[in-house]
Image (tube, rainbow, N blue to C red; front, side, top):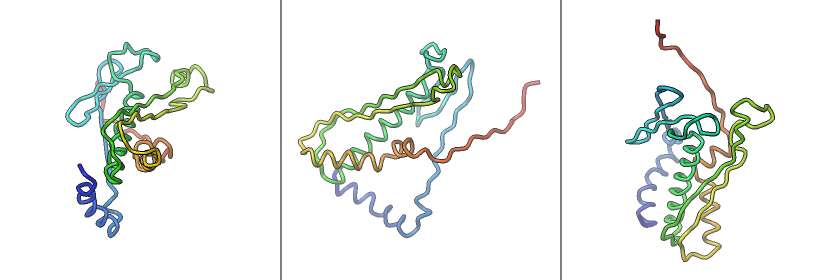
Length: 172
């Protein structure tokens, strides 16, 4: 896709959202089914992903780890955002890779230590780019990618999050 094609697709959306800010608010959702053993199946587009415990917390390594899935979502979002930014600004980008790694101290999630955090204590996002663009343009692309990547900004801003439950009946 070229810059003018991207602008043509996005222009009517931007105009609509300027005139009707509420139209820009979309609720995304995900759901899963609690499964056999210690697992949860989540539909991701047309595929079904089955998540379970990481080996460092007792899993056998055959199921997806939710922490890996979070990093995968970050990589996907950052890659799409970088490509859109480069396209929009006509910064040449032939391709490349996006990677993310994060440090977890499993003592936290296993309740071994109250001092150990539950969750990632550090996440590193990295791009290896195939581009003839100069450093100034690539710096701008990275800065804008950080600014507009939904998953990255969500991780950084820690939005208000709630948890609740309801019972659907039980087994007699």
